Image 1: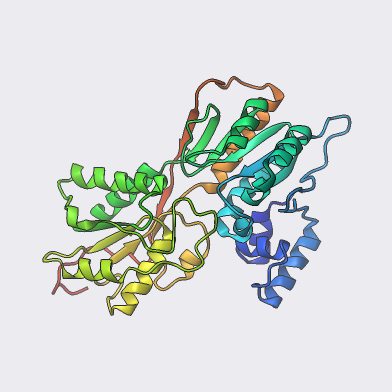
Image 2: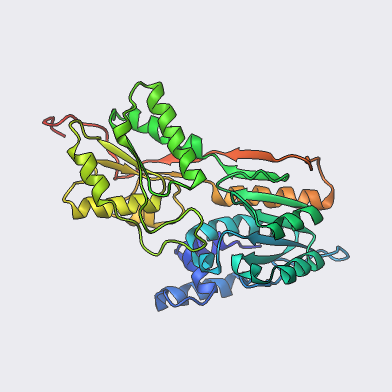
Amino acid sequence: MNYSIRDIARIAGVSIGTVSRVLNKADNVDEAIRARTLETIRRTGYQHASRGRRTGSVSTPAAGRKTRTIALLSPGMSSEWKTHELWAGYLSGIEQTCRERRYQLLIYMADAAEKEEDLLKDVLRRCDGILLKLERKFPEYVRKLIAGLPAAGFGAIPSREALPQVVLNNSLAGKALTEKLIGLGHRRIAFLNHVPGNSGFAERSGGYLETMKEHGLFDPALLLTTDSGNASADSLKPEALPPRFPEEVRHLAALPDPPSAVIAANDWAALGLLHTCADEGIAVPDTFSVAGIDDAGPWTSFCVPPLATVAMPFGESARCAAAILCDRIEGVGTYPDNAPSVVYLPGKVILRESVQPFRRKGVAK
């Protein structure tokens, strides 16, 4: 049996991110957990593609079949993402396709582009196709690679480049979560976007805005666009700490008719919102119900209170894009070469204890 990184996490009773950290020999792993994870890897015979500049084969090719190789490029993410839950989710889907189709995988993070000419030569010489973690705008070396090899993309936002893409439906996530809160009786619902330049977050905000207007509930005072100081739309590195929002929380609490629920643009901001509410003495969910979007790691179930969210299909988007790329390499199917072709995948609303049905003040629970 071929095991995925997700299988290893399930068998060892840890998160995908923990498995990734163990495989990459990170320091921030409890030794007992590290030992249990390594024993699971040994027992299952799991073969892991190293996350460095060049990786090994993720599977053994069938006898007589030419070994094909995919280059996974993430020009918007540095190697510091290698142990992050979000990247591990994407990678698990890619590894699944590579095992099923018997492809090798080479991974190039943003750091690899320091010498663009060397990267171009290496990819063009060694690889049969390009799998791209999509960004708003690709650097020139990526465009050159797309022009020379079959390509497909995955991620949170679509690109204008002429390649097939599988992306998250961020607008629908914002709509679905807002509809769920309205169904729970909430009418005053706020939305907090802490990275104004992030296209995916803007789409989620747009879904919220459209739904609130459809129900005649929109109030501009409840749509907060702020700069947390921790994050940047163009940052290559993951945020080290969740942002805090003291001014925003005080603004919402001081409104003549304050919200009963707040949606954050992603789970990381929602975690910062939970921390800020605790600092300000505001009870969640009694005063504010709080929800995020992503569900990229198990911590959303373990934080206090456990976070309601929209589980976005990170792994599935990458798996489908990798399968499309394999088809293109093998000449299976027809994909347009002169226009972007985008498939959107929906998320799923997951209610947890950070959200409760609306209750009027003074009404017993």
